[in-house]
Amino acid sequence: INGLTPKLFDIQPQADYEVREVEAFRAESAAGASYQSPAPDGSRPGVFYVNTFNLKAQPIFGMETLSLHEASPGHHFQISIAQEDPALPKFRRFGSHYTAYVEGWALYAESLGKELGLYTDPYQWYGRLSDEQLRAMRLVVDTGLHHKGWTREQAIRYMLDNSSLAESDVISEVERYIVWPGQALGYKIGQLEITKLRAEAEKALGAKWDVKGFHRVVLTAGQVPLPVLRELVMEWIKSGQKT
Image (cartoon, rainbow, N blue to C red; front, top):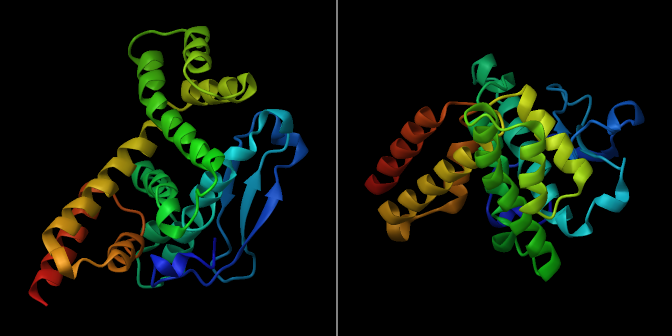
């Protein structure tokens, strides 16, 4: 994937990343995958963690979308590029308070697979759609648990009935929503806003549209609330219209 990203990006992180399995002591309760940021000084690479606790329940068809989300051009790009810019305020370089931006970008990155030349295998495309369905399902389940009074068992049953996830993954997901209200909503909300901003920029700029420039302005902002990101993109659009 790293060799494909120049198709859509003119900015790349200096830091590299490596793939590791989740440590045994936390594997049973950990997510299926996650990303750990590199050291700002480059002394340690980023880490794309893959959970091998229950391999029989981990479908191979989800690997391309998972890699796009956690590594390149998802969290690895978004986190590393911000960390490497000393001109940004520290809270925008190193903070993780804006879930809709952080996870919205990573989910948006999953949607770039076809433009990058991936998802040629129909099973990998199915994996992409399955993960998209999961993020939409979170809007229902989190709301059910924290507003509609759903029980843990109701939430688990809903996800088992409406997804291809293994039961162990569903339980892990639901227990996460219970202890972290609202966090899982940020993925889809953020992705929808970034996708909307891209569509608005394409329409406004017409022949001047530059996908690499759009990605640059989103990534070099650092971690910001979605209204601030919108302001930055609108400024970029106005600048592009004048040239």
